[in-house]
Length: 200
Image (spheres, rainbow, N blue to C red):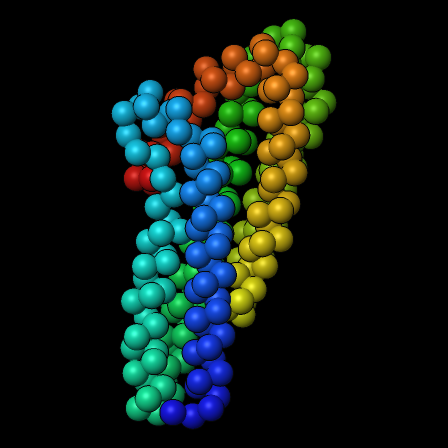
């Protein structure tokens, strides 16, 4: 095996281990955010795209290793590219789905209720709404590029960035019981649509 192939295999393995760390974060997020809705909807709510893409990335690792052993550079490059694509896509899909198809949808519904508590907090709610939409746009734009296996779209950066508006929203919910009631009214419906669309 060429040393350059060994070096790439080592980096890919490191990238896969890094990905497992983010899968744990995703699992914890789903337990926190969606566990109560699983019981209401009688479904197991989980993030399918990160898991499927992780499985697909692992599927390509063995033939990539075999290609390195056989000095088959074309096959090695093809499987390497597939692994990068799957790991990046799995996390990007998750972040976009959570921001755009969950929180943005719920915030849109809440903002348009025009209840007294919404009117009182409209500026904050709109800022959170637009922050999340802007994050999705940036993730999608950045996702068009080619990324090193260990950058994972610098996915750690995006996890940290999306937590900021989500935490602001949670803080508003904690302060205003009326907002929490609106959230709990709309969240199960939004989760159910996400489950049907993504088979989460």
